Image 1: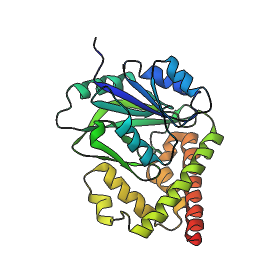
Image 2: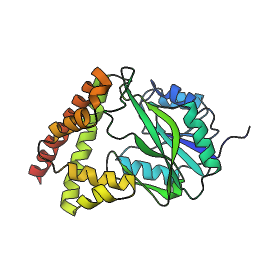
Image 3: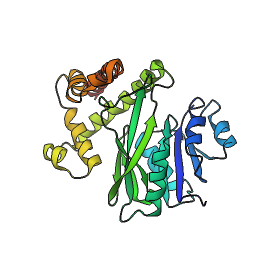
Length: 275
């Protein structure tokens, strides 16, 4: 059976623990690219042993890094499927990816649903947003924001069945906290930059914008203006989104997200005072 017209892009930085299983989940692809931020562990050797192509570049920020990759990596196929090393493609999603690339219709990108797990529990309710644009024509996609980038497709978007499974706590809580400490620094810098340049914060667009990713961008910017934001984040995830239905894992996740939000609040104030 011929390989599907899909190239795979995996972003890495010291991912020797998770990369092998990620690569195994996309073994059906004949053009796998590992876009590495100069790992100091065995990440590149694992990728090399699996037959993946390796491109190394120092990480600056998420949007710039991803946009550079889409423009400069020599993908063999017209469609690119992007995932992180702690994500796994399920068989159902694999079938949907292959079918979409073979007959995309007018779509230039496809949205997929991700399942986040904590200690073996699917965070079905408490997860802030489960939908992500991951299959796309690279020339029709770009990213904005320093961290948690917004995907901006140039054309119609479809949606696929199946799940992309995500294990953000695979390396433990300490690594998750360290990573989100870095993320919060970039989020604070993004907030300050948006306030100085008048970034997107339309109340109308936050609820009426037809494109999901643009709507979410406006919602995020408006959310950053709320008082008592860490508490609001907890209540939204745990009560409004019914995170309590996810049991103990849902409670832990909602608390961790509120801590992350508080880190952003403190760093934003610190940056603002420094201006």
